[in-house]
Image 1 (tube, rainbow, N blue to C red):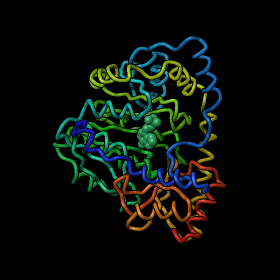
Image 2: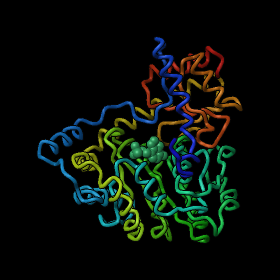
Image 3: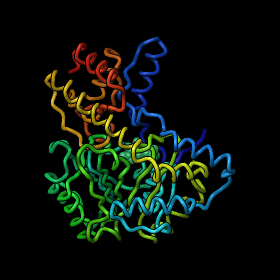
Image 4: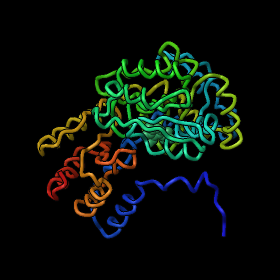
Length: 381
Ligand code: PLP
């Protein structure tokens, strides 16, 4: 028999797996499952990006690239970051196969056995797994009592962090809540990070998907440039999940250390995909605006439909998720909802916050209506 490492055995399989296994089983039996559990846009990748990828392939961009990514893309990223108020030259950027890989490399570079990492709950599922794989210990701050907003919970964050805290992960707009943190909240984070010398990861993968608010990039705050690693990617804003393209930008010393992990593991992101990424950053504003508009309309629709059934949710300002308050045993609620109503959602406990289910509204209006109707009919609302 094989013997496995602590680093892998201490990580739980994804809690969403049980739900997708049930969904697959039901679909194989012929059921029509409304899938509100997915974390990806339901739009095709904009055609000009697809064309750019194909042209790059035809032009022979099929070999290895510089490990950190082609200069043209890192320059385009540098300009995008500058537009957000962040100052990172191409030498402070690493292009990765997805933002997930970026986060993995950063955490591997910064965290080792016994290091403390603070998370704001509910938090995206992979943060916990990545921290555990690195040997870190988690401190969790619950935002479920404050409509998932950080500003009114800053006292709790203050109580949770100390000089022992190595890293704090902030994700605004948030998966799974859609919350966008206020400037006052981010200033509170800054004050604590400076006081306790904490490095902060700002996961901004949903930054382009917001409804009437402009999220501030944490790294633009005074005192934060030298302690912030900004993570972003192409999956969500450009509907490019399967292309696997993301990046991180931060102080050069981190880029040097994480760059070793990067070059000795993935080598680089895919060559022609990086060329498509340049096109995405330079020529896709209209397509992004159209997708965001559609998400915004669906958000209104879901909120209205839930309201019709007397269900109040914390209104998300960004991303394409919301947290539905459900039974205390959210795992059982989600399993029941899929078995009885054939509607798939993700239990809040997967994100560290029991009592909720995450709904993704990256689905057509028709499917959203159908899903909520069925939940109501089967007594789940
Ligand atoms: N960060 C958050 C908060 C996410 O929700 C996701 C995807 O679900 C990622 C990072 C990773 O995205 P990708 O690896 O596709 O760029």
